[in-house]
Length: 377
Image (cartoon, rainbow, N blue to C red; front, top):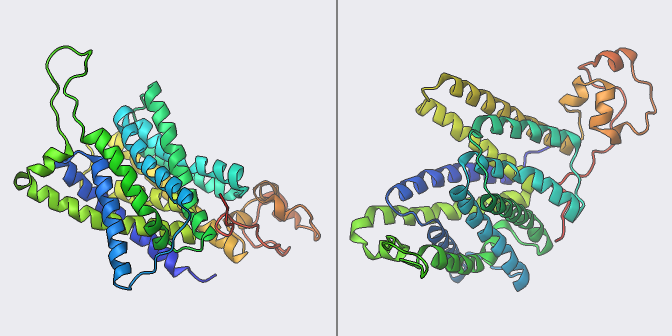
């Protein structure tokens, strides 16, 4: 099966730009600009202006989509970012990591319940290996409270629906990834502006029923007003707008070419690379923690490789590692569609011991994968 160069380019672009955005965002926040929703608003405004400039110059053809779909999709995107940030504030880092890991099983359930898209047992097994490894490497302290749990669930649901719609709406309205991004960016900018004004730019020094001294107010407006003192940090804010445009464009394109699940696997692969770089550049003093993290990342990488191998084998309709090395009893559980009707006898040695040689019966066509199915919301 030929490699989808566009999907590969989107994946590489997504990983590299996301890592760069995370690092620069850390510099921005360490410089005192601790206003994530205002930063998100600036990203969406820059994206919308960028595509309008390209359209005015005749370099981009904008396609529209119905208002209700564009507005709902924008709301889930902004809600995903907002709820994730609030979840990190209300919950422990361990529960926040669990929330991110829960997006994969939530996506599988949503695809099945809402769109009727099934996922093979082999894919589910590879995803379980991936999530197990990431859990070992990233989840440490887990502290839970009722408001934080509710916000975490909202973050998972909004992220899941947003990523599924990124794929389905492209196919439904015949849009490319950048055209879909341009279609929703103006509504995302408007919604994130409302959230930023409410959360980061309205200062209430003291509520009517509160006693004592007034709390200190720090707003994004005040930060921008003192431009000379924050010139360097605000320059980095402008740079994040450019990188965020690349991140979002690659994300829309990757999901449109593949699926929301593949996008999540790419994202978790990025997490493994970041953790590996952290181990090398900033080794921890706790040896046991280093060992646990290394084992977790290794298991997660194995899950990533296994997922990619199975998807390529299914696309090419050829044998995968499970078909070659598992006993027939295990294969009948992993791929029941292949063993509903056995027309040729299977060699007894292969059945009992599990041979690593290809099976003699020819394989019927592979089942339709989640990438090839165009769910309609």
